[in-house]
Length: 598
Ligand SMILES: Nc1nc2c(ncn2[C@@H]2O[C@H](COP(=O)(O)OP(=O)(O)OP(=O)(O)O)[C@@H](O)[C@H]2O)c(=O)[nH]1
Image (cartoon, rainbow, N blue to C red; front, side, top):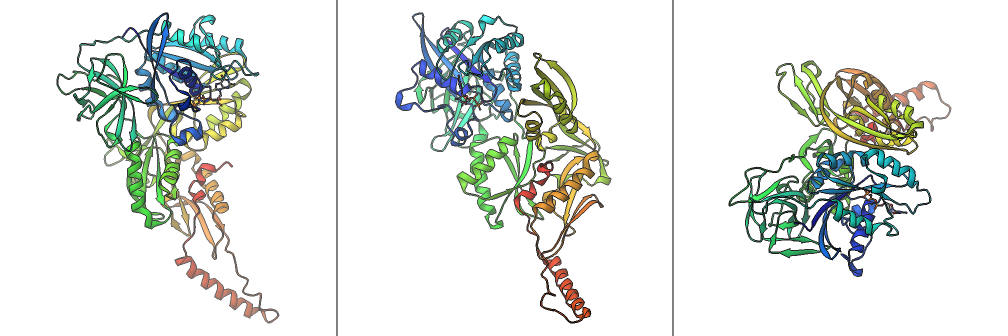
């Protein structure tokens, strides 16, 4: 145990976490030339393309320092706010963290939020000033920022370049000297923290764990404490670039476990593994069942593909336990699924995977958050509203609560005004404003999560010219005055276009929706009225004019009454069309509410 170090790397997106991890692997000789590939840890294709680490993985290195061999377990953490629970569990499996800060960009929102997670878990922080090779690097100033943030000494900050390899030796030395070795009772009952799991189509779910107390031997009967299920530890081992099967894994170490589980949902991140015989009394604190934050409908473009979509979604769920879905039907779109996602990025990933891996063409409806509604009949009973159409009738509605977040934004002082007006426009209430330096300001807001779902990132980028970083954490439900704005096309409500919005914005949003839909829906053979309504009350109207065939074209000369007759006839025809005619709505129209400000 004395020779084990468990650490993670925390950083803002693009500050060089993956590159640094690669350099550490190189330096410790953990990778052979043949295995060398850029960004080794990002194994999913999608991850590599997007250049972000979606799932956390772990890797073991060995390093000889002062004549002794140390085992260094690097636990990789995902870099996006959607996966912050996984970050928190990875952090809980470590004793130390490298805090990587880009020498050109300095501290950003995610640097801070991840740092807080690490400090909550009493991790030893090793600050690394990365990218010092960049011409735009500003090492002195950024070192000062780090010193201010951590209250450390300037000489504790390690200047490095994950690109050139500068400082990597110092970083490894600091990991060994500054990060404490694991503590724990090797003879106690087994307690192993699950910090990640990966689906392998051939071997089933691979569980990654860190042993807090006790030891695990191959073949033992084990129990997952949160799910209460028992399995055999068919294979255990340590994770190098490939898996190394072992007979035993002991206190303080990190490893993988294969039990033949075929469904990712049976292995929950944050769960505690113990032995079926002589189990631990307590589970490790901090387990949460992650709940989806954002919901949207996913429908097959061709209604006949519904069953195929179902089987694709089921397969996706086998390897992504955070995806949830239930069948639903929409009057407008037919049969489909209401899906729950961890956040907007997760939603995009699922949509993309459906299209790439399963060759499905799908329509996604406007994402929304999960609301709590209460009716007058049962004011204490929560009605969960994951779909705007589930909102009880306004007349029976007692109140609605919506999820709120604490948003942290770091920006340049020049943009404080812009960022503030954006956040206030998004129903945010400012709670704090701190000047990190004379140039850089940290703003915190309490904001409805729903407003983040609606085009927040893009607008933040625009108003700050790209100089703002953003992170958030949920802070619970708050009562809000929410109403459902329905959209009627051809006097028929299109349920898939409904949105829950704040009462004060409803008229404005309804009007904009109608205008946007008018742009997006192609003209057809008949007039299409577009209306926005709250309950029975129409609040806005636009009309998509028909592509009118000029029936009078052939009728040159002649008298006016004949022309009129033809026009009357044409009108009648159109009326029939209106009744039976199906308005063709393009996919963008379902997302129109997200793009009202374009
Ligand atoms: N010049 C220079 N570029 C670097 C250095 N370290 C990383 N980069 C570059 O910075 C970009 C982002 O690096 P990544 O390692 O992908 O960043 P990351 O923090 O892992 O990003 P996420 O996984 O998205 O959180 C890449 O283009 C790297 O090549 C460095 O020390 N110097």
